[in-house]
Amino acid sequence: MSTLEGTPNPEAPNPQLPIVQKLRVRYAKRDRLRFTSHRDFCRAFERAVRRARLPIGFSSGYSPHPKISYANASPTGAGSEAEYLEIGLTEPCDPAAVRQALDDSLPPGLDVLEVVVAGQGALADRLQASVWTIRLPDVDVDAAQAAVDAFLAADAVEVERMTKKGVRTFDARGDTLSLGVAAADGDQPCAILTVVLRHDTPSVRPDDVLAGLRSRGGLQVEQTPVAIRLAQGPLDEETGTVGDPLAPDRDAP
Image (tube, rainbow, N blue to C red; front, side, top):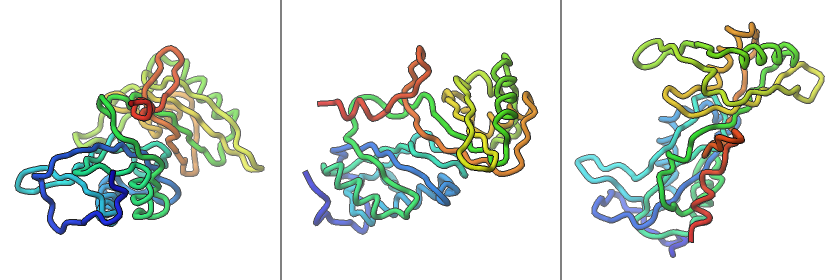
């Protein structure tokens, strides 16, 4: 298996080379890099693949594209410890060497955390729910708790979001599986929400939950909230917990 050393970096893609290995990548968006849009990240990651000299496969056709599949990217402005993508390679490589090469080729704040060989099944099918924290500076924890109680007591909480097809109204309550409040450490008031969201269409985002807390519970947020995705993966319907989507790949023979 190649360790990437000495791997050629072709000037032009060769779509005739078959894909012999698929790797699944977990990466993080941290600090200021959480403001990177998905399109900007895609460009940065493709450049990192070239710098890392990975034997990436390409699609066929008039304009070949690298074999990179992105899954359920977080919104611009949100941090994440659990973003996922899949790459197709034309020769087998050591996953640990790929992780190090990609991480070295990306700017600090876009950090590659793990790379595994893809097993059976589609990665996107395993990303059924997410765990988020939402930090609310200058928000008293009792006020946040009152808004959360009102939100959870409602059968439905309709919110609006601007989409490519215009303003869309949908229920933010139904896919909110759990929502809790804690006080942050320190002298200044700061409430921290922990929320588990089911992935659906349209997918409920942290901003939608905050909109619901404002409309249903009267929550006032003056400073910019900071949302961070801690995990996303398969949903255990009985416990409401979110599992590790790469576990089946690690356990595969």
